[in-house]
Length: 264
Image 1: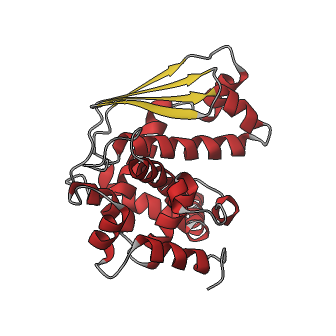
Image 2: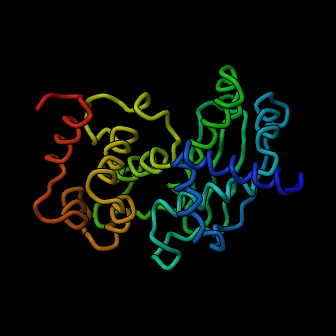
């Protein structure tokens, strides 16, 4: 066996071991495969904070932001939908900016034109724990905001700003996608107690638990339930996805017992 073949075999072995050691990464690669040709929209990256240390850190870690954002977008799509043939929220233009501002990140816009900003001050704060922390946080935040760009929305119950159920669904699903793709530090980041109506991670970890314990396609079906359950409700969606015998409060109680936050 010549030296070249030995090197190739060694590389293949390393990749295989990595897939075994990090099954979530291997799973992500498989599920994203069918989305490689999907048009995620024109991504326009704009660095509005070139004078900041956060900008230098970001550009060092992510030298090709358009390609990176597109890759994360396909992870999100693969988590929210079964295939490109589904009825997907279209994104024609995605403006992504890094800015010298307070906060962390936010998504705005709609009707095919989306804007997401990311704070260089947050990057600098994360950098105090090292480059790995910056990259992990940047990916996690991006998964959350991109979910807002591509997810479906409840119908017949008002809007994000006028209806609590609408808000919980939107923010809960965004964090669920982040949880499902390894964007949080597992149990360490799971909020203890509380209620799913607090949204974000409270709902996100719960939704992923439902996926892991009831239906492997729960997140996709739950997202798509907004097309069929009108007016949308948590109970209506749960029954639509899992069956008439289930209700959201009983499942929440079961989840809390299962993760050890409360006793039976």
